[in-house]
Image 1 (cartoon, helix red, strand yellow):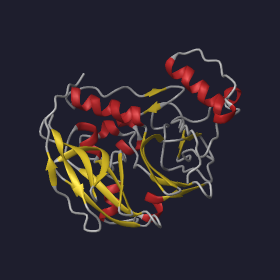
Image 2 (image 1 turned 135 degrees about the horizontal axis):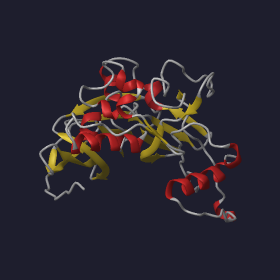
Image 3 (image 1 turned 120 degrees about the vertical axis):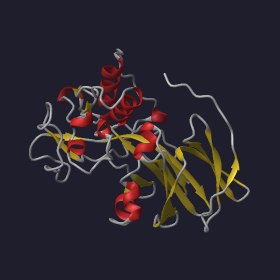
Length: 306
């Protein structure tokens, strides 16, 4: 049985918070909220039955040097044990995008630098690639480097035409073991470091969808091109819930988004979206251990881009 807890996941994509407001996680949360939305907030006294507790946070994964590139973020100076020899600490993981609970394990999938990636993708959708990209910007709560980031300016790291998504980083799958208060790195440690399975991780926009069926955890997300600019592809990953081990992965073509899973009558159903204009996708049925997919329903909806 998982203890009853209220969990807030707060991740900052830009370096250090000023010491005056970063004394506690609660103070940091209030400071971020006030700066992000222009609200005047006065921290109240936590209710005794809902005392905030910081369980985990995203690790420092880059070192940021401020200003416009080439002195911006870089992969040439890596943090060591969460510290940077030069520059400021940078957290790229900015969003918990999917969750599932299996026994005493809480699974979650993430997306990095969400605001910047969506803004960059919207720029591609609305403008021709000859239009100026969004301007590099640095604020209290985020850094958006777009096509000026090291990922975008290093040949071969991003698909051609998607350089404005330069703030994207490969997403993560993690498990929080509530019995040991321990975070387990699933996507980094359990998926092979090279080959087709790793390539799928490294081409996924973010892990937006999770489902559980017959002792398996299924994690899925659109490809970078599919999720950001409506191109083609969904990547799906399968794990054994009992030991969190990786089983296999596959790619589904003809789709560019996947959301919730629903278990019913021994099968697992998911809603996905097709690449054919603004059609919703058929639902897909999954029945382990065969992991076969079958269209069972198709609907049409109306979507509007603002």
